[in-house]
Length: 361
Image (cartoon, rainbow, N blue to C red; front, side, top):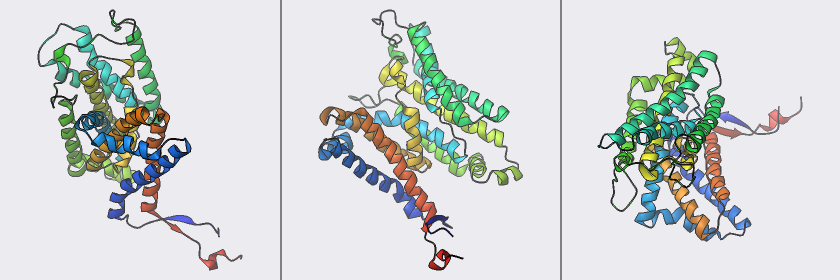
């Protein structure tokens, strides 16, 4: 028998350890990255203050955290539903972009349109666009058994090229000094501001309401129960008559709907036009948010707040502590790795072979 330790699955994961895992992962990732910054010649204290404290020290900074939190939370909630059903949608970035494109079509084609119906119609159009883009992945997965990870990821690259074509071609602002961007949207195409003096708009409370809806769907509804059973025990779900194809379609459409809605809220909110910079990595960062929140709708709210603070704090650190943007992305990635390691030791225990087992035969 091998003299090396091996992992043995625990009969039951500790609830307290599960709750503490994200906090432990954040602490470990913070310490590791502060050590990395010290090796880089940066002041760990200055970076810690700029990245993790400054976002909460003023209302102006915290309002930007809330603004950044909205799309991260919305996309992560949609992805988590699929992840719990073992449907891995990695293409939320592309669905986010398509949502922004669909939402932008209305003010681009009808710049003179007025009325309070415009921005709600944009949000709905964006959500539909994201869902339609995710439907391509669902079709290939169900009909042709293609891997949804690869298909959704490649479709994100296609979405980026569609965005580039539009902004360098038919949707390019003729008065935009040759910048790849659309015209500025009219006033009625903008989501109204929620808090005066900030950029936080009414899409934020909508995101919170949809998060609560995700909780009810996954924890209280029979359809959510079927999705979870299909993810945990697909054979048992099949025997019970639960359709695997329906679960795949539903998971991907919900994820695409959420990502598309987030993209629509971004162009109809803080940006006010369609830009190539709309693709900021929200779809990939939301994967970290979903797992850091334990794939639980309420936990994802907290993890989205933490990740948004890291985004804003990273911008602060790049200015005040001269930290490169790559270091911020390393922090995000190490946070996910630390969490996955912590979860592994919650679900498994390290068992050393007994002395008798190590004796040669």
